[in-house]
Length: 72
Image (cartoon, rainbow, N blue to C red; front, side, top):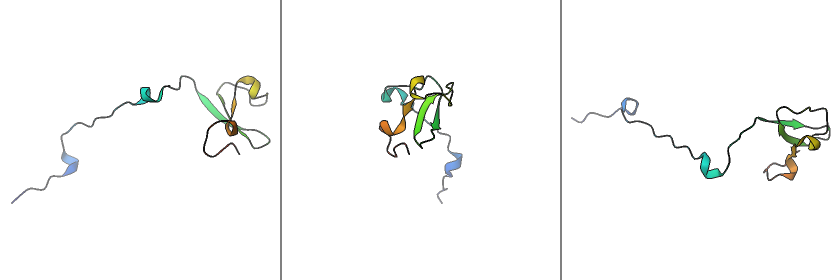
């Protein structure tokens, strides 16, 4: 009689590949998402002041970027 193998008892090592380099960039700084009074989403460095002009602080408005859902 053949013994059924239990997959939970396998002794094989899991191989996890790191494909980060294939995408051409790594996130080197912490970012955060803000929504302004007009309902636009902004992607900003985490250290910015959300009460000041977001564009002048180097933020990107999401509806101007290539995000599939836009910024509203």
